[in-house]
Length: 161
Image (cartoon, rainbow, N blue to C red; front, top):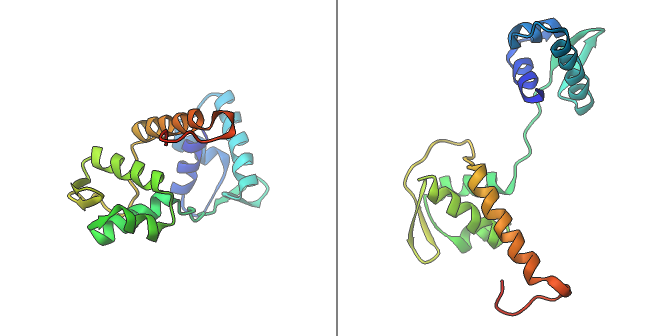
C-alpha cells in the first residue's frame, strides 16, 4: 500500500488531500481510506510528504541514494567493454558484488562475457539500473551461505572462498 500511495502522491501536481489519493487509487471502503491516512503519516515522518496545512499535503521528491549497483551500471554503460578489475576499482564495490551483478546482467541479456574477466555490453536498456531481484537475491543468498559456512568457528577455511 505504501508504494501505491507514494506513486499516487508523486503523480499529483501541487497540493492534495487524502481524498485525492483515494480517488486516484480507486479506494471506496472506509478501512482502505483509513490505511491511506496512516501511510500519509508514515510518509510525512520519512520526509516524503510535507504538510502544507491541516489535511493538505505536498509530495517531496527525494533524491534516490545511489547504490553500488547504480555505480556499477553507470560504469558498464559508459565503458561498454571493460574488465572486472576495472569496474571493481572504479566502483569501490567488493569483487563478489561486482561479479554477482555482472552475472545477473549477463542473464538478463545486457552483457556478454568476451573472455576471462572481460565483458561487453550488447543491449542497453537505458540509464535506469536494471535488476532481476529474484535471481540476484538467490545469488546473494548462496554467496552469504557459502561465506557463513566457510567462517564457522571464526576462521576461514582454506579453499572455501
